[in-house]
Every structure is written in structure tokens, then in C-alpha cells.
Length: 261
Length: 305
Image (tube, rainbow over all chains, first blue to last red; front, top):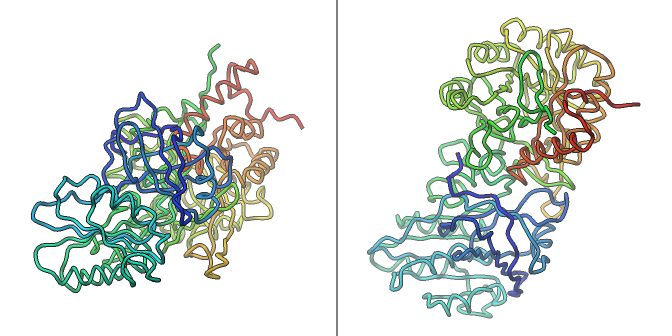
């Protein structure tokens, strides 16, 4: 059964901002009569605009921020569906199903959270950083191919997050991979936990680094998905002990030990 | 004006003619917070096999114009857990359940049919001889009239519940398979399952589905499905038909009903709009009102050619 607060609603696009790097920030205004959505970082929604039959399926997006009847989504244009979403004008309507999926674990006292974001994988981690209590021990490691990919860097800095940037071409922050930054920090002392979202090769490397040091690690995954609620069984990911898990119901946030990337 | 939407099929009364299609609405209660299954004509469950099945490797789905391809591979909990966990809550709610089932060979098909026959709370069995995504069973039976008829007959022998055969569109003569199923003892025919298709990723130069081939569903297949319902209805085989294939509006549903379907099933539409079946039911009612029709069942097969 769907959690009681899961709703399927028509929302209005409040604003649609170009962030550069092929990314847009969509702010959705939820219907007023709706009870407030208690969205947790790492949860996602299924979005679909009013554009006829192609593409047919909604698209899954991690929530970037939520509150006061608004929902922010980071959209990176990768194909027809995201291009249509990115092209929606403020005032247009779209259907939203959510909030869905398992969130990141809540911050734990005495444990430092290392948030590892690759490119447009910043969404749920930015939200996690925003939601963490002021003074929480966390660092956001944010990497991309070049500075233009780090579309939320200024916002993250403005929000007061402890931020470390890196780019493969060295155009912003240190030169290298975000996993280089992670490796340096994992060699530090004290209890740590890693939360990551980004391209699969990056996640693989993050999981490997954490596994080698016995550090607790959680990853937010992206897969092809039709329904978002466990009906289609289309979003399967491999489990280390065999069989499959559904990204939508069992994730999209998994413990590293629960999935084979 | 009140419109009577009820449909009686093989002695079973459905409160509306709109049912969920197998594999698109789980076991009926996954969306209960959004879609009360009691407001549907019925729930056709995920295909059930004798033993649990994990399904195919990913990617299992990809999109196409006005449709989608899937190669889920009949992932399901198996008949034992289905009976113990899935049926009791549906039964206590009073949901009309049609259990879709399949096997790898005749023996396992018959074993599941026999197990489902004993289940209170299952109104009707739907025999899947049409899944394109598994190596054994499924479509192999549904593309050969002789095999299809024999399998229906074997399952018929172990159940007293109404038995529908769900047909594949991947044949040149749908009427031949339909007739063989009826001669084998099918009480009803569901048509159609997905059309066999594929997609290619031009960047990776790999198939878009892990299983290479998959089943096409959604509005893209509606004209093909409608044509097959029409052909089978016209063959006057003497059993009720259940129309399936790309139904996303009340008008789509009415097209199938006019072509001869007593019931319809909605599948892919529920993925993009979880409440699609409720909207389609409302639209059907409005269409009847607009046309001064007080009893929807009167429109079954009312197509004028």
C-alpha cells in the first residue's frame, strides 16, 4: 500500500530557471488543499507535463527542496522527456506523484556526513545539507567535468554548507575526481558516513573506497522507471545475494551492501 | 440519468467493465491509498507461477513513441505466497480478483491452475499463453493453435472457475488461436498481450532492453488490439471477450466494447497516471449519458459495419 501521504496531483510551474550546464531549476506549486508534503532528502517524485503521448511515461526526479506547498526539482536535459520538461513555461501544469521512495538516513550525532555529489546528482544531497540542523558535521564534495557542471555551487555556498569543489579540467575547485576528495577525507579520523549520488562509475568508486575502509555508505540510484510505485517492476537493480530490488520501492537510496552497481 | 455499467462475464458480475491488466497493477493493493480497487470492475493480478520468479536482468523497460517496451520476465511471488499474503486482504475488502497465471510447461501450468482453483477470493483464472519475455511457456503456446488448445483443455480439467485465455497478437491468424482455445474449453478470451518489439541505443550500440526483445504496450498498439477483438468477435465463437491494448480514455474503452469486448483492461496508462482507470470509468459513464444509453452492456458488439 502506498504511504498515506503519497498523492497524485496537478501542480503549477511557479518558475523555471536556467542554471547553465544544461540544467534547469523547476519550482512547482502544489495545490493548496493538499496536506503539506513531508518530503525527506533522497525521496523523489514522478513528473509529467501535459504534452500528449510522447513520451508516455513520467520522469523520476529527486527533490531539491520542499516546503510551504512548493517543491524544487533539478532537471538536467538528457533526452526528449527532460527537454520537454525544461521547456515548460511558468504557469503551465504538470502531474506530480509523490513523495516516493526511501530517503537518506537522518543525520546521526557524533558522525560526520560526507556528501559526495557528481554533476546533476547534487539534488538530493543539497536537500540533505539544507535540512541538516545548523552546526551539523557535514561536508559536501561536489564534482563535475568542468565548472559549468557545478550548477548549484553558489547556492550551496550561500546556504552555508561546507563545500569542496573539484573538476576534471580544473576550471573550478581542485583538479581531479570527486572521489579523490573523498579518499583524502576517508583517511581522517572519527566516525564517518558517506552519502552519494551521481553517475554509476562514480558511485562504484565511492562504494569501493568506503568498503575498503569499512565506512558506512549510502547511494541514491537512477534507473529507467515507469510507475515509481512498484507496479511495473521495471526499475530493478541487482542484489549481491542474487535477485533484484526495485529502485522505486527499495530505494532510490540504498545501503552500498544492498546493490551491485 | 443513471447508467448501468455492470458486466456479467462467465457468470461473474463485475461492477464496471474496467479492470486492471496483468502486470500493471501489482497484486491490487499497492496503490490502495490512491486507487481503491473496489472502485474498479476487478483486478487482474500479476502473472502467478508455481514457484517465485525473480524476472529478467535490467534494463527492463524503455520508451517508444506513444508506448513502452518491457521485458520484466514475469517476476512474481509464486502461488504459495500469492495465496497466503496477497489474496486474503483482497478477499476481505471484497475486490473482484482475476488471477493471471503461467507455467514453463503444461505440467506447471496445470499445477498453478489447480492451486488457484482452490482459492476462495479468486473469481476467474486468466491463462497467460502470450508473454513474449520468457524462454519457455508463454508465447510459445499462444502462437500455435494446437498447443494452445491442448493447454487450455489441460487447465480446464483442473478448475471449475471461469477460465479466460489471454492471447498474443504476435500471430498471423488470431481467430485460429482463439477458436482452438474455445474448443479447448476457454470460457472467455482476453486480447491482446504485448506486441514483440525492440529498441536500439545508437550511442552504446546495444539493445535498449537487457533481454534484447520485449513487449510493446500503450496507445501505440491500440489499433492492432482493436482489430483483433473485432476479428474474433466476428468469428462468433460464443465466449465473451476482454479487450486490452493501449486503452487510456473512456472513448478508447468504448471502441473496444463496440467491437465486441464485454470487459476491458487498462495497463500502461496506469503507469503515467495511477488513477487512469477511475477516470476512464467516469468517461465511459459520461459517454453513455451523452448517447442516452442506460445500460453499457447493450453496446457490446454494437459496431455497425
